Image (cartoon, rainbow, N blue to C red; front, side, top):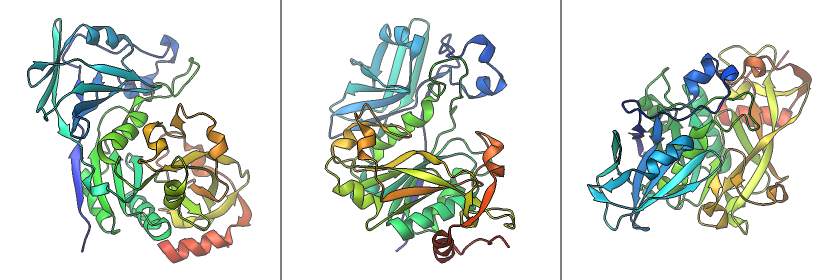
Length: 373
């Protein structure tokens, strides 16, 4: 029987029609056109949903910065009923909690001279309960890459479902993503989230701090959809995970706190590989075979599931490198990229060394690429 694939859209609270704007994080000299296009000044919150098991509405938001003061002075209403909001701040996002014994339909915030309102959704853990789930965030990645990423992890890691967060792709529609994933045999839910991703910011100590979107979406996934999953693999479309003996899902599920972090290594296409390039073309070692940042699998029902998820770590988890595994990792496919961050990886020079076991695996799972002559 075919697995179910569905699509929903994020319901953010937008301040564009109010006098409020989030303060800039970048100094004036660093506010170039790319920064202006990607820095989110107008989203007050990304999504609000009711957790029946907690009798509360949870709200996932970007860092408020200067917006904290007007929010603290505003009335918070669930279906017109005033409630008290509790905020918890993290490095790049916030989580708000509002008491709600029954599910409300609307969340409204009324300040002096401004107001915003959105629907309140419902937590949807059913599709992912007890399953091994891929969690990925993407924008305009080629649909063949999406298919190969999903298929590879179903066949090699035992993935059973995918939560796919699409950050406003304009090369295709969310339904196209759902269709292509449906061909791989995974259960899936696609969230359409066309809000700013956030820029790199020059001139501040942490240049990634303005990227509110990704860490917020990972914790929206954790708290609304994936808290009943057996294990969750946090990875990107250009990353193919490997492991020895057991899948990374099994490693996370068996770990005392439910955490299985690992590093990656770059792989590049051979010089004779023809565009459009695929994961299957990536079996050549680069000239400089440096390690890539940590990714991980996590078991939401264990202690690790209580920490906030971030791109390369569990936020506020101490001694994270003590958990680093040597029996798992990922191949980072250099040309499986739109070049949105940097085009340099698209021309990463390769060596004369072929990863023969990887080449054979890719041929078996994905149909293979072309070897350099």
